[in-house]
Length: 165
Image 1 (cartoon, rainbow, N blue to C red):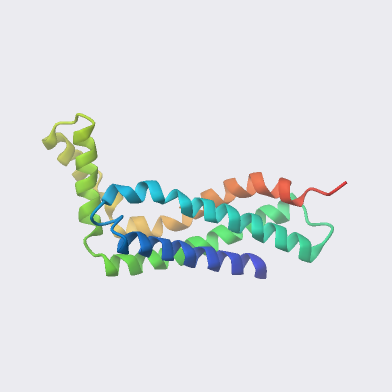
Image 2: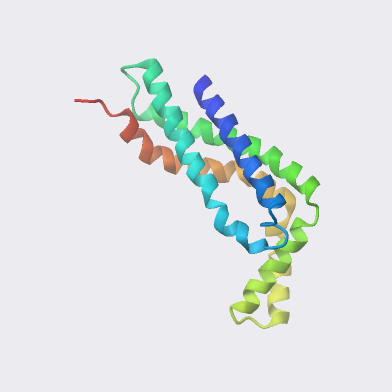
């Protein structure tokens, strides 16, 4: 599990660094919607981290390391990364306290672009305001990373842990 924790810490810190880079490059302020197209790179990094952790652990342990152990390794990487990112999200909200208001405005804007009348879009955004609550977004990192990690691990573990012929 030491390897999984190490990879989880690394990917969690890299995800936080990516979040801060998006902020300082203006993807979350001036060009708010841009971060929606750059955020998938974090998922790609999570794939690399999980595959790397499973591969490294398999090589350290040798034979007898199968799907179940690989799956657990991947999930541990994801949970650790999610926990680090939860803390990182709270740090981000300290750096950018107006994020929630911009997220609400962006939500209204997108609805209007899709043809929803402005007043209805504002009401919809207000009804869904819990989605933009900073605590909900921050604490949501753990289940989000867990889900992504489990899905990645289900695919990666049998591939990485298969025995060579």
